[in-house]
Length: 115
Image 1 (cartoon, rainbow, N blue to C red):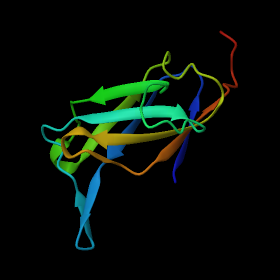
Image 2 (cartoon, rainbow, N blue to C red):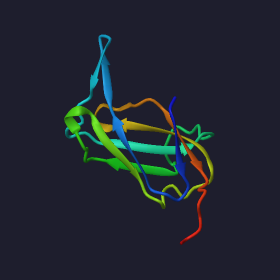
Image 3 (cartoon, helix red, strand yellow):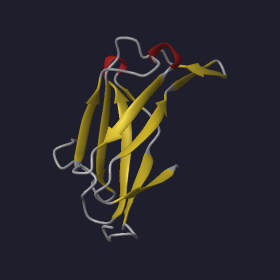
């Protein structure tokens, strides 16, 4: 599973490439008129709902919908959570299916001085 590092309290953006595999052939999943639901939870959260999720985002505008590409943007406020590794995934609302799980690791910032 993929892990991304995010500096605590900093904005963070990543392209999301959604694919589908049919009969062993992988291709882009068309996101036209689709809603993506991003959820970030503590790794220890085993609940069957999203009530305790730390970040919840709904994405309805995609950078290249027909090519299966969207953008996940997290604000500095959203990433201002405790240091640690969190589990995440994205659900495609219209087909009630989830992407592969991935991890976000919230890390400290190094430079703090203001010049």
